[in-house]
Length: 148
Ligand SMILES: [Zn+2]
Ligand SMILES: [Zn+2]
Ligand SMILES: [Zn+2]
Image (tube, rainbow, N blue to C red; front, side):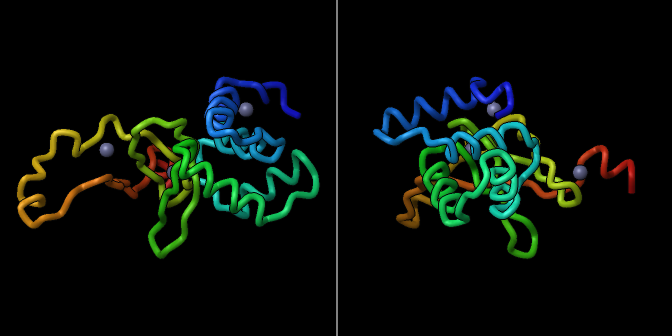
C-alpha cells in the first residue's frame, strides 16, 4: 500500500461512505487513491489495472459498480471524450467543471461555474425545470500544445 493511502481524499471518501452506511472496502479506497493521484481522466479498464496492481485480483464488475456508486455520491465525475469514450476523475463532492486534454487526457479544473448566474427564464418559459448541468471543455493542455 502506498504511504499516503490515508490522505485527505481517502478520509473524505470514507466519511461519505460511512454517512451512507456503506463500507470502505480496500477496493473502494484503492479506486479513490488511483484517481486522486492520477491528474488524468482514467478509463474503467485503466482504473481496474491499477487497482489490481495494488491489491491483486479484483473483478472488473466491482470496479464498474464502485465507479457508478462514487459518481452518484459525487466522489468522482465521469468525463467524456470525442468519439464516445469516457473516463473518471476525482472531484471530492465539489461543484466543478473540467477541461480535458484530448492528447494526454490530463484533467484541469475550470476556474468557475460558467452558468452559475445564467438566466434560465427562457428555458423555464418552456416549462422545463433545470435540475443540473454538465459542462466540459475539450482541448490541448500547455505541454501537449508545446510538443505539437
Ligand atoms: Zn491516496
Ligand atoms: Zn495534454
Ligand atoms: Zn456548474
